[in-house]
Image (cartoon, rainbow, N blue to C red; front, side, top):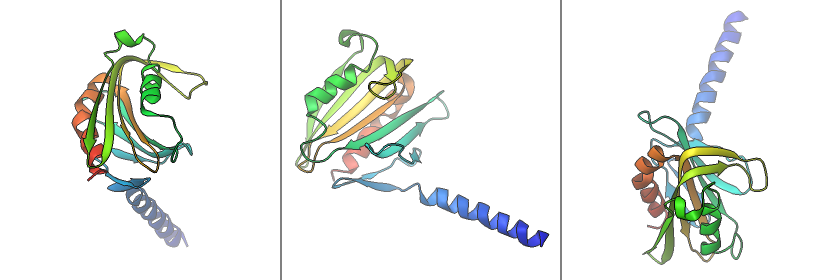
Length: 178
């Protein structure tokens, strides 16, 4: 009986490991787009219905981790590009002229993409709820304009990590538009 329980325990551990591996897809879908996850970024189960996908960014050479969150609210929902950019900038404690706020528009295929960056003391937390100041943080965002509704992608974390991850972030965003 003891051997059988040990085997069941081992089998359960293996199944759990397989399940964890299976839950880390190389690609994932948000609305009509299929994005390719950078291999080093970890898949995270979403904790809110508002979030359509979530990734954790880690770099062994950099202290701390970052989050990448995908939002999609459907056609006509979630607000336009400019109000969302302003909302992202307002999530910093410092005024806009002190956070190195910048944005750039590009067209990939038939979709307009607006990339956004800012750095400073990021106020982490749900809007209207308690917020935690994160000094030395940065935000990189992308807004993909689409008929089925805009896709909002936001990466936040330590400035050094976000800066080092920008190329992978853009590559991931653009992978969905190929």
